[in-house]
Length: 327
Image (tube, rainbow, N blue to C red; front, side, top):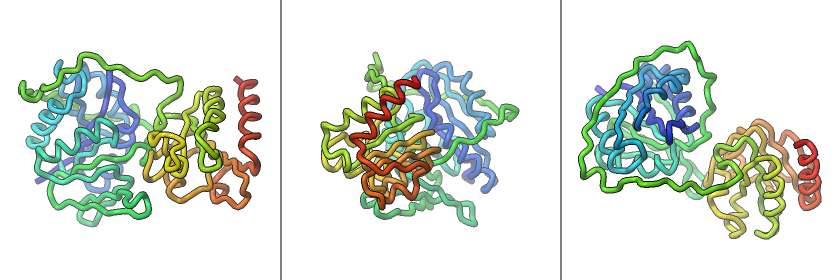
C-alpha cells in the first residue's frame, strides 16, 4: 500500500531552495490530516549536513542519497535515482517545486514510473479518503482545473510562494536514512563541467523581500528605467503585470500573477497596475502592499495597505531620492 508524503528537496551547492521548505511546511499539514509520514528526499554530494535544515520544517524522515555523480543536477541521474527510491518505498505522493529543475525532472520521472502528473499547482485539497487533488490555473489564469490521479504515487510540481513557511521547530527529531542507488553510465549522458550564473545586483523575483512592479501605466518599455533605479536603491527585484508583458514592454520572466510567478515579499510596490484578479492572486500574500495609480477607482487600492493616487512618473523619482537618504 502506498505510504508517505515525499518532498524532493532541491539544493544547489548545499543551499536549499526556499520552495522546498515551503513544501515541507505544507506537507506537514497534509501528513497530519492523512496520517502519513512526511519524508524529505535529498540527493547530492555531501548532503548529510542538510538533514538538520529540513527536519525543523516538519519531516518525520529524511532520505539521503550521497553520491559524487549527483553533485550537480543532471536529468538522467536524478530521474534514475528517484525512480529506484520510489519503486522501493512506494510513497502516496511526491511533490517538487515548480522550478527549472522541477519542471525538467518531474515529467521524466512520471514517464519512468508510468504515472500522470500535475504541474504548476497553486493548491492542494484532501478528500475524506485522504486522496490528494491539485488545483492549477488554466486558460491564462481565467479558470482553475482540479487534477485527480487514481494511480499512486501522485506526482506534482508546486509553484513557489504558494504556501507559507512554517515556524521551524529546532527541537523536532526525525529518522535519517542514507540510501544507495545504482547510476548507470547511460544515465550520465551529460556531465556538468561548469555552472555559469548570470550576474545581477537584483535578487531573483520569487526570492525577493522587496519587489517594485510596473503595469500598463508605465506607458512603454523605455520607462522601466524609473523602476530599475528605485529597485537598485532598495535592493529589490523588478516585476510586471501581464498587461505590460503582453504589450512587449518587458520579458515574461518578470511577470507576477496566475500566469506568471507567485510572490510573497515583505514589501510589494505596484506602479500603474490596475489590479486584475490574476495579478492580485500572484502577489496578494505580500506583507505590505503599496499601490501608486492615477485612477482613484483602481482595484489595486482595495488590497493595498498604502495607496497613493497620483502620477507614478513624479512619485517614483521622489521616493527613490528619499530611499537614497535612508540608505
